[in-house]
Length: 304
Image (tube, rainbow, N blue to C red; front, side, top):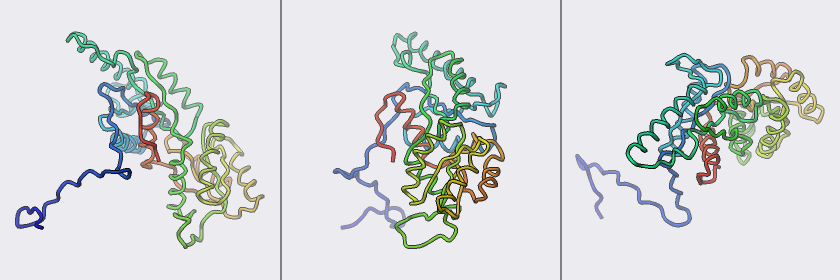
């Protein structure tokens, strides 16, 4: 049987037939027409690194939910017009103005629009856990919004974040990439300090992801507050007291929310090496869409 050919007799790549049966990949959901914007609330001091991280996260989010209107608002941004780091409040005001214009245009044409009933935007905090200080600032921006806005949950705890922590530890040579493979890592840690920010509530929430990480690594994992004096040192002492000899710090932070120098100080307190923050791990974009969809009641395939 001959196959189609192109110029110079080269074979032509034909479209792959759609897979059928129970192993068929689910078709990706599409953002409903007129759906609210997803506004990613980026905490911390704005910087090119924070912007790059947020843009990469939203790129993944748009691929997960085609047609999604996704924007970035900085919690500590700049109110100046045309700023490259617009505040969350400024972005929500712009979204509200665009929504009002669409509603007015539709009504002038004798049409009704669903946008008049729902929120103008859903704000998704770029936070792994419930950082009370940052969430307070985000809620204030929502209260100042000229149009109704929904606040989605933070991204964690979630098994995908435990996976991301495992990957970051393995990249730093502090954990084996795969327990099933018969090889060892000489510098693999036998006790993990899971460092988070945001106070007691954040530490408690991080403990859930910590249990998932402990199951992956088969070593003890205990959460500590990076922004609370003595917390990391106390956890390090607890781990060493229970028999762990080689500790590692796994930053349970995405990056922008952690003050400069916080991780270096924690490593000195615990006298241990550290993995990198979660950063632009692909799962963050998936989780952002999942939280956006949950806030709006849009059915989504299970995030895994």
